[in-house]
Image (tube, rainbow, N blue to C red; front, side, top):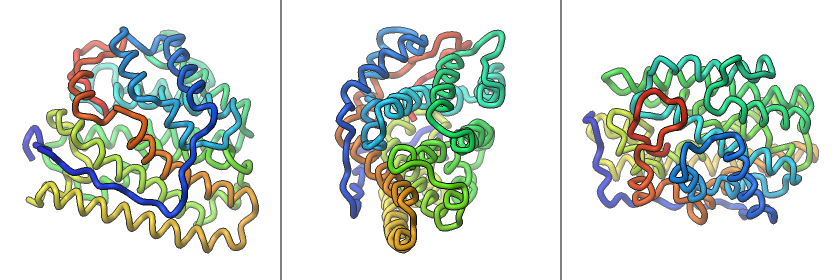
Length: 339
């Protein structure tokens, strides 16, 4: 594979869901409060970076994916979406992947979860991350918070595998990529909050049941793999750092448009598998589990609606305007682009 891939006038497929989408009535206020929260915690190095966040509309992502959450949970999930995308961009998904700070950045995020504090010399985003975790601990039971925390620990840990994928000269196989992607996407911690945003916490026995975990996997795949198509134009501008499911299919000579179609077909199959299994599980599910299944549907549809209706994160023009945004304290100037 070369250092770049030419996307030309790539047609991005549309995904249709057999359920309706929704948006939280407090979306606009959550959006304003999230932008202000990011400024409070010093997440914007300059006004250009703040405007980039405004264009992305993280508050609307939370409002579409948790449309029935109470106001406090909506706001902390909106703030989390802002923090996660910025942290993922800066610590994991970048051209200069490995720096002297890489391990310290990722372990600091795990330490916040494990120790409920930041280090003596807090790194970029650590104080904001601590605030998110403490607010979630107040809203969730200890066991429920640990479901979210486990997903985040796996994100930080699996980031090391993603970095290895980017720095090695040859692309990995699709199966290995799927393993990495399901954790580095950040979907598992997000989906772990879907019951709290609907009918209340699912019991541990129901949450970890094989059928429930399979539904979560389908939902994760739908969002992660569709994002691989929708972010392709952005990632193609990152030399040596654009390996995702689409480009892995092109590694054996497959035409780009055919590779997109292959991934799109796989996304649609995951939607179908989810719908069939969800109908079967709901027949004997308690109210909380039914709410969790609805929450998984909210995330799949909500992410797609956010991509189509709200965000400018993945547009070509916005991407070109956002080049070279660097967080405070980063040692190396990087050609920044969205993930």
